[in-house]
Image (cartoon, rainbow, N blue to C red; front, side, top):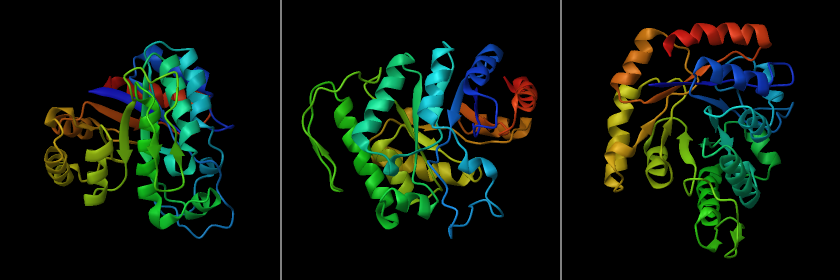
Amino acid sequence: MRISTTIFLTDETIGPVRLARELEQRGFAGLYLPEHTHIPVERTTPYPAGGELPREYGRTLDPFVALGQAAAVTERLGLGTGITLVAQHDPIALAKQVATLDHLSGGRFTLGVGYGWNREEAADHGVDWSTRRELTGDRLDLMRALWAPEPTAYEGGFGHSVRASEAWPKPVGGAPRTLLGGAAGPRLFAQIAARADGWMPIGGRGLTESLPVLRDTWERAGRDPKALQIVPYAVLPNPGKLARYADLGCEEVVLQLPPREETEVLGVMDAYARYL
């Protein structure tokens, strides 16, 4: 099982260049970064984990800029978003960012996609909360049209469309590996089967009950049963937990690093290295 990591990189933490070099040197499989453009101060949306929203949420680095730095100083380290808030992006510009990063990194990019939890943040981007899932799917379809090998037009249902266009570079594999995050349920599983390569469940709880349902949805959509990827995300590890993921068929797990300065992050990284 591949052992990757995630961290809230901010202006107060270890930097992406040092972090990426240290991860690759130790043999970690990948680095995934989260995204928040901003956190409105006047916020009624509760923090999903409960309590006060941690300081790092309002200070996150742009994941594509940070991952670009990480790509430039590594050769093998996988690079991903965990997650990209696709509904908050112009899909034509986002398709270019994704394709460029995947091209420059030699096909090492994974597009983690999520719907978000912060209504106020989404509203500032003009996102209607009630239709954000449909909007995300629509924008992913437009992006795939731009990644197609031949110029392909797409007429979206949310005011975005694209003419048949030359749009290079292309992602190395035609489209990047795409993992969809979110809580287990029929709507999410239908979207995974329709548009993704797998699921990125936060913490990995409840997989024993959820995976048979997802696998059934996946196979009924005509997808290859062997192709489904399950990547537990933001995991605080112990040997028993990782063994259970392996037994469930997970080939990658993403461990949570603390959003701290260099010495503390490297210390936790060394502790996690025993799982490699």
